[in-house]
Amino acid sequence: MDRWRAQAIALLLELPGHFALLATAGDDPLGFGMGRVAADQAEVLTLAVRPSAQRGGVGRLLMQAITEEAAGRGATELFLEVAESNVAARCLYVSLGAIPAGRRRAYYPDGGDALVLRLPLIRPGAEGAG
Picture 1: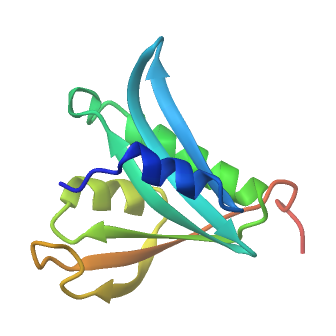
Picture 2: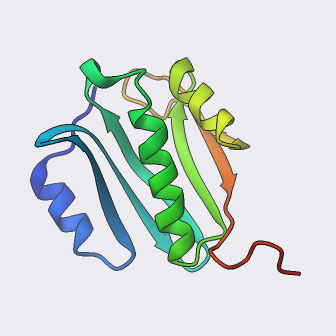
C-alpha cells in the first residue's frame, strides 16, 4: 500500500481548491480524506480508514463529508479512482450513487486497473431549482 507522506499532504493543502477532512473518536484518528475542487469538478485524492475502524461507517461518513465540502465549493460532480480489486470500496462508492466513468489500465504499481467513478453532486441551495 502506498502511503502519503506528511510533506506531500502539506504541499497539496497549500494549493488552491484542496482540502482534507479527519474522522476521529475523541483524540483517536480513525481516517482521513483529501479532495480538490476546480471549477465545477471535484476529485477524491485519497480516502483512508484505520484498519481497526474499517466496516464501521467511517469511510461512508468521510465520503459524505467530502461530497458536501466539494458541493459547497461549487462542484457539480466528483470523480475518484478505485482499484478494481477493492470490492468493499467499490460497494461503498456505488451505494453513494457513483457510476462508472472509465478505466485506467495498469494504473497501480502491482499492475492492477483503476476504475474511474463519477458521483453527481447537488450544490447547497440547488434542490428544487430548475
